[in-house]
Image 1 (tube, rainbow, N blue to C red):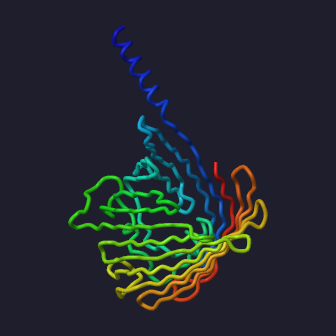
Image 2 (image 1 turned 90 degrees about the vertical axis):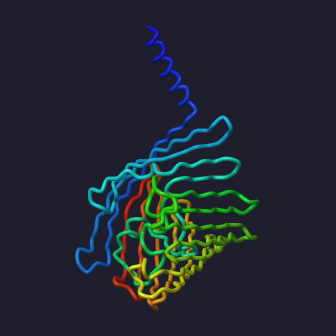
Image 3 (image 1 turned 60 degrees about the vertical axis):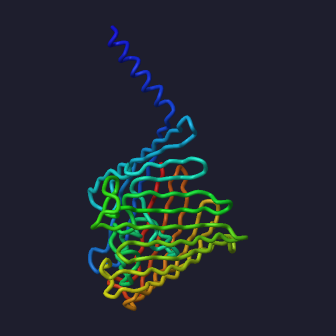
Length: 319
């Protein structure tokens, strides 16, 4: 009887402790038709969904702690099920937010112009020869921490990655590995909002850039400039170390209460003198219940291994 009483007491204590925690479930799904720029087999159908679980609690001192995990079937990789997230924990206290685990730095800060939805963005088939970013896919994220806080009207964010080759467990600052750092600050200035940032990687790459956003003609215009110093050893599209310049702009507006329009422009030129220009258009119509229908168009011209115009349309649902 004593053991049963202790067991029941332990279960009651566990439920009491969990009463202070919040658990939420959300999800999304996407169905899209894509006409890519591929010379053969250019028509694609993409279907996928994600279910996300978020957990949060507040300590007796007022600190918030949260984490999330997602189960997904990728819409553009056949049969590719995955468990995403779970490799970072977020702490909030005193107006500051600290994320520890798998974090990233913005290695293309100031590079804007993308407005199309994920399926077309991922599977348009276009491929510019202009080298942007730090190079390898892992060079701008990894095991580390971020810090962000309000400073008056401005918001400051700082990111440090101690090991770009690891996500949730690994050596910090390994002798044979790479680390990266980045910082951004965003502040309103009259009718405009200005965001500027820098980033750096041990492989010799660095980035700096800024964006300016302002209301214009019933919508929002955002313009940006980015300069990235790219290491040829880490970037498959580059043969010469040097700078890449990127200029871009987006304009987004509501046509009515349920319909939105966005256009984007982006041009880049790297140290090999490869240059390309990309134009994007997206129209979305809310259908109610978290569902929307969209039509996307993207065009790439200039120095590219695959250029042309790709079109996508589909339905996205948030549950």
